[in-house]
Image (cartoon, one colour):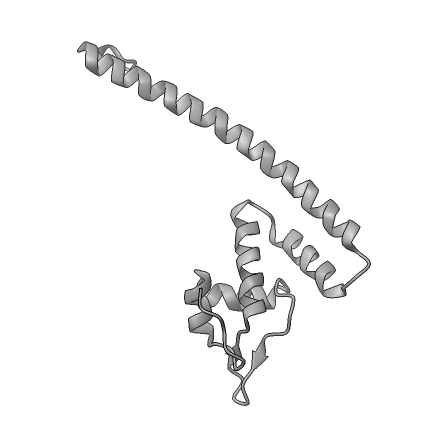
Length: 138
């Protein structure tokens, strides 16, 4: 991973490095998900620092786990507020972790069903009677 120099990087390069679109970067900033104020040039162009990129990666990982935007915003607000709310941050993360564990359990059940169906199809194809598998009648 390349480090950002002291002048920062453009929004296009930030998008490339974080794997999100320019539109998403702008949205994250407008939605209050970024914990710092993104630097701007005299002409108003955004200049992202390493901390911004690190935080955006955190946001994208949270989103990948299904964390709602409002929860990410709440977490970002707590971080921006500084010291003294660590217990609130922990509670927010523990709550979301519980949600993710529930999702993982549901996904594991779904994967087990898919694996079972794959085994059935392989077995029927090897036995030469795959045409006996259930199919809806017209």
